[in-house]
Image 1 (cartoon, helix red, strand yellow):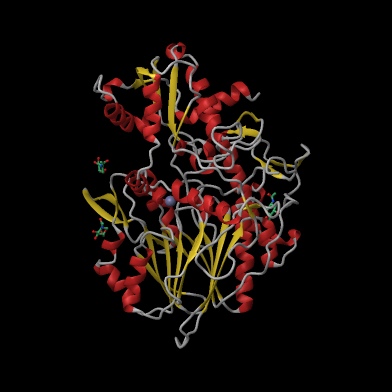
Image 2: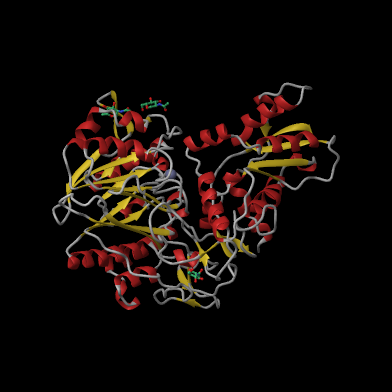
Length: 595
Ligand SMILES: *[C@@H]1O[C@H](CO)[C@@H](O)[C@H](O)[C@H]1NC(C)=O
Ligand SMILES: *[C@@H]1O[C@H](CO)[C@@H](O)[C@H](O)[C@H]1NC(C)=O
Ligand SMILES: *[C@@H]1O[C@H](CO)[C@@H](O)[C@H](O)[C@H]1NC(C)=O
Ligand SMILES: [Zn+2]
């Protein structure tokens, strides 16, 4: 079912819209026929929020025809049209509508990461964000991995939001008149009035992230709430606290911020817009607050509304939340507009600008035609449908063997499954698809003469569960575990299938049903953290080249020294195996095998 659905998709290769029958259509895009509309209208309150988070460059939406991708096919231009129409509805209803983003604007697709040499990640794609009427934005960890990116945001992006881009606990260090000064990347807080005159106090908080680049600073959340500026910022009583932050609404540090505010303001409504772990989630820290997290990759647009009791007599506030599938059918349904009346000029110009950007970055560059879907978690590993098998068992061994004098020596290759970021779908496999699926430029190293049995033990050790390692990975920004916990939970709770419709099935901590369109969960399989090439048919004693990505070099050496006593290994024993970096392997393979 997921593999062959005939719908129209935007093709970056030809920059026209092509339908499943192979006939290209240059007319304006039709919504794919297979998308079903939402189940019910949104519940409006006095103050309403449209929420994006972890967009990671997916500004042209999901363009593949394999289900459920078309359900996420809305572009940023479509979102712009939606927001414009929703603002008009809010005006008619005489209520407030705000647009909020919780960070991680880049690292994810070619539109952000496919820039030519000398460019900066996200510099071009960011321009489209400033064309939407965002009321509040907050910084994500992906804005802090690379000083150049943070500096570019600081200089070129953030000033356009006039004090509404917040980084309450993240600083950048700059040279000012020959002196080094640390300043907040955006603003630490914002106070503003809504169209209806409601007073809002906002913060933009990042989780306790520790892999930020030199010359940037992330302050721990529990230290932040003790700062003088924080105490001063929350002192005055607003009508509502609107908190954005790159921090999941389930675990982590929202309660730290929430409790600090509650101590001063026991009754003021607190609306929280979180992010980072890529899940749909909602929780309530008390009956006058609700926290929403709205997924990832422009798959989900969140909705959070509150009916405010301005006199504070009622104990409980009526909130509502919804996870909208990001597509035109959803947007047209909620704005009661026909397809032909939906696009605004700004919306159309944003979409065509993004298509132009894709062209400029040559994202349609064609490697080959993927024979079927390869998924990260919807297929068992190892199997023919697993993107991890494709990568480590087929693509990497092939790509590393090209022009490599060591290729005649038997090898065993190990990589981390987190090195692969997204599924590969049947059909044209382009530069954009490669950047999306396998972006990291790690190199491969090897240690010679490792007995095969020992190499297998190294892999087993790497895959041994460790809570301490998980905590370290999380602090460095890795969220794969939290995201797959969520996927696994959907399957466990709901069983295989009661209908044929695929997508997210959210069970969160808030009353009622959150999903806007009801789905049956996608197939889900756990995959190991570390994966290997096919085992060679040799005995355990046979020496071979143990090949691995440099990302795991330290772990491999530590493990080798802990499980054998013949030799003490150190970094000098690991030598570069190939000039081919990780992010080219599937491209080289596709050129050779998929044409
Ligand atoms: C989109 O989601 C709906 C509702 O679950 C489902 O019926 C449909 O098959 C999905 N469409 C595609 C193209 O995946
Ligand atoms: C962030 O910048 C402010 C303003 O310069 C400074 O007072 C503060 O100490 C900095 N915070 C950190 C954690 O570096
Ligand atoms: C921080 O910035 C200063 C000034 O540009 C530079 O000299 C220094 O090397 C940077 N620190 C690191 C560790 O990159
Ligand atoms: Zn993040």
